[in-house]
Length: 146
Image (cartoon, rainbow, N blue to C red; front, side, top):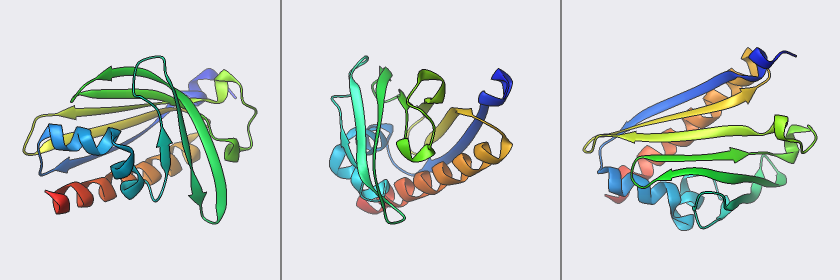
């Protein structure tokens, strides 16, 4: 596999009829995250350099993923690394993804997400579909909760 392959970036986006402040809250509050990330328990303080873990069950399999918070611009940008043992890959830096979530505007708030480190276009497309589903659920939750 080449470095170019690992840099195949998955992308997802949505427009949420809510303030960027409200959307940001849903991205960083553990109780809200559990609702749009299908029961995931997130543990972090969302400070740059801090560890972050995600625990839960996906399609009947328990998981505990991990990463590091890379960038936090409150109300605008959230970036972190992510590694999942369920990938079957060794826990080494080259098997971590970088996930970047950006918010633009307010009422509506445009949310864009990118995830690098995909091995090929099939993995990229799978990740993009997964993240699009998560963002669609985020949109429903935020708009419903007002």
